[in-house]
Image (tube, rainbow, N blue to C red):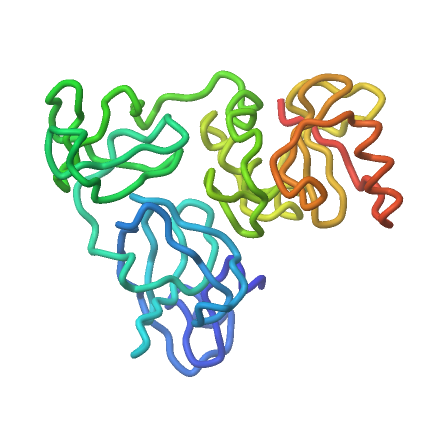
Length: 277
């Protein structure tokens, strides 16, 4: 089993894995919710540990352990990723989410006044529970006043996930990132597909295994995914791609031919091209 998406370690594992993995103890886990704009999910309980991904405001996580240093070990509900989160970023779940953030980033104010210091900055895709409207604000069950124009119903879907990805053009590259403060290649794909209502795993190797039809570089269509070992890009059309990459250290649009050639020179060949629809 892949420990990145299955909650087990030598001393502790999820109760549903009993009989499938070895661990000293098994636990049912407790449901929490992310209450910071975004929270790092790290590979180990340390601030300098590798950033595997980020959890966004309103996302739920099943926590199996909270240590004395304030690290919570658990599994994200959205994509099943397992790791260590700051316990300070968690609270017991509130009202069920009704809306999501449609702007690249928005502010949550403590009252109906944009001059007030905001409590929190929420990224694209974060989930909130709207209790009522007080135009031009939507007021959440947690008491945040959010610009109503920055929200869309939770069930709303982008008609073109590539358009969602293009919103992040110029965003700095950050391994494990999922927001406009920093994003990586598979994070861009995941956020864009989720905006279109398509479930998507976190890592590029997991995304390469998603259901879809084989395609080729010679007949690229908008929305095709191009995979290398450890990397993924999105075709915008027959000739260009958009991807978060360490060469540009940003989300960039470039010629597919040039990108494939450049990456090949670094020792990596295209492993597959996939068409999701």
